[in-house]
Picture 1: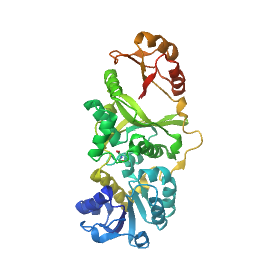
Picture 2: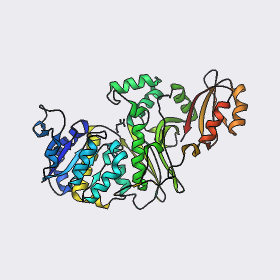
Picture 3: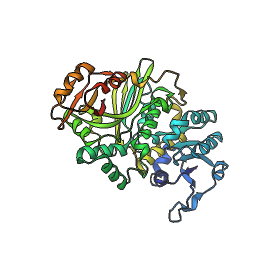
Picture 4: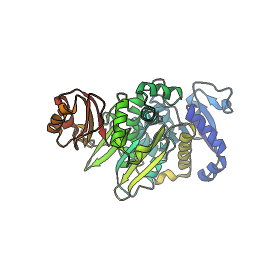
Length: 406
Ligand code: HSE
């Protein structure tokens, strides 16, 4: 029998306990032994839960118990999850987590601690909920160089963007709807300002390259300024606005960002709607691989945690690439101002007023038809971000919106 503890008995932690019971025969077969939840650490009591009698409030009980072979950390946040994970790993206990903030900020240290103590630190549930992209990249794609990852990594914002486009409602209305449905938190900042997706693209970059980058090196832009006019423009262009987390190798460097982008309809990411997530991975030899599924939620995320528990107990984790991460060398992340793309720009002013200046400033621009009254919309050719930013203030009208094309 393998005894485990769950720290943080919220939506995901509760799902893990329930799935361990529900899928006991399959888990026993794959993990090589029965897995049993001995303790649940939480600040609260759960008198009505079937697991209520296993709830403890003192972490030392599980840390000091030699029977506990693995700790599931579903607390979220850095503290005290970091301290608890460090303590568990240094006692040789495996740690399995869904905590993307902790993995992005302290995963390197925790993986090294795990390796030094003959344990595993596994994090499949930290990105993309139930989508099995991390283990797949670390095993099935391990023979290839991964040159790019772009993804819809945040379900809350994808729901908001879908509703703005299909329902014609404002950002504020769509956010309120997402909150009512329980998709967005009361304080939605981490989702809408891109920090949640930033942590996820940091993790996926590390899975792809073995290098963990600093969060301040990842250009991250809010999606809260987007309007229904942006959604309509994207539709007319033949695409959809999506919040895209992106990593792309460029020689010895990488371009890494999180920002809204117009994704053209020939890209499958344009068709990923509502709270679903999608991750497109480009292998140098393999070409494009697409993962799609539920990026959050009790059972999808708990299922990823269970897969990590099985990998830890079966020893399968020892055959995965990049068991530890290195800090990315200086200069690895390219200055975002030097990255290039086409940009959709909407300016106040008539076509007659804007067209000539736009062509002088940006070159071969594509002027859009059917723009809203009093506005001119155009798409620049591929130019460096710096060039576009420097030229925009010289347009004769004020810039109402600028959205990068993927
Ligand atoms: N807030 C996150 C999202 C939860 O909306 O995708 C899953 O990480």
